[in-house]
Length: 245
Ligand SMILES: C[S@@+](CC[C@H](N)C(=O)[O-])C[C@H]1O[C@@H](n2cnc3c(N)ncnc32)[C@H](O)[C@@H]1O
Picture 1: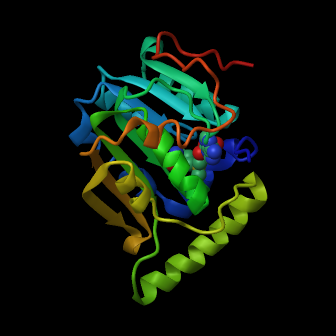
Picture 2: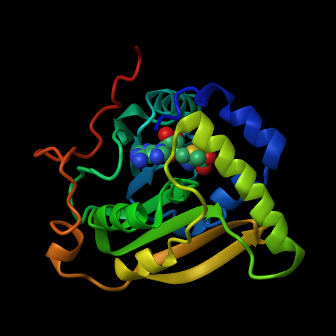
């Protein structure tokens, strides 16, 4: 799986296919999480959300994780161009499952159009791994696609998503075949749904979840541990990782 080839085209493709709808969803909850200080962005891609954070959250520290080095380069460029301080952001190239970050550390997690890359089995593991890195009352913002319950919107969403998955499977080799709602995995990881905003007739949504339950440690760390995990976790941002080739 790699989004490297798609990275240079991602921005204009989004503009053509979704206009500004996706970005409006990404930033929908931003005002309500301004006070968070340690932010984890997983599968952040080219950094459009991070760019918005540069201005909205001037005191926060960001850890930006993505498997694609090309996406990370773009995200770092956007961060710098938006005036983001290099001491406040760390860019980590990593593929999940196999996340190796400090446990119980982040008070905000954001996954934008990331959880849709996984099969139901992978999703549970990926959500549990990310959850293990969050504090007791952390907020998790999920922006993604969904299939509405009924009517024309349901069939439209099915057609759009079928085409999208065919495209992404061909170009990036993601393993997911269809959208799988992450709600059950988030609930199992101790999070509770606090609000849901929908756009484009229910095809896109942004949901705000908050951690309300602390699970036994083994449940979300050891039990879901992946073989590729390194022994030493990444530290918090000190300086921007050097992504220049
Ligand atoms: C569909 S793009 C979404 C990018 C951006 N967050 C957005 O809202 O448009 C998915 C992103 O997740 C990254 N990604 C996909 N699978 C991953 C994995 N298993 N581990 C880490 N990153 C992954 C890709 O490299 C890509 O940047």
